Image (cartoon, rainbow, N blue to C red; front, top):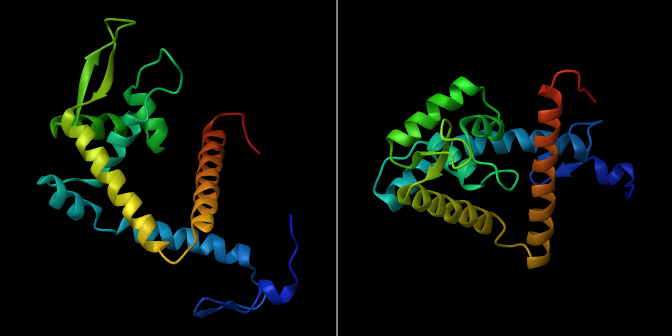
Length: 182
């Protein structure tokens, strides 16, 4: 890991002045929370409504993309429990948002090939369309925000961001598993 002298870790950040005693790592933590607030207010539902002709709740997009990711292991099927895990929500909330997503026509319940008493979730044609539109929107936001970056910077950031989110996901899972703490 590279080290930096104090001059590179304090001072200005973009148009802001970094508080005395804080570091670029403090800025990164604050930026992460700002980003969360920004994206929670983004007009994705309006953009997708314009593209699909249907009102779209963000929760439907999240559920559809969780199902589209497929099972974690070959031979497994996507269930409500898996959606709950992927979205970091409790099973009862997952059951409700999955039911709403089914009612909206984006998902269907399909009898399990492995056990006829069980069901798994599958995307409908409308669900595949919604997911494709959401990915185009997400990619467009990324491309617009990084429009002044080199291809190398974009790829490096994309890889690091994905790695960061995977690490956060793994840590969250570890922290919510009984008897497993860092």
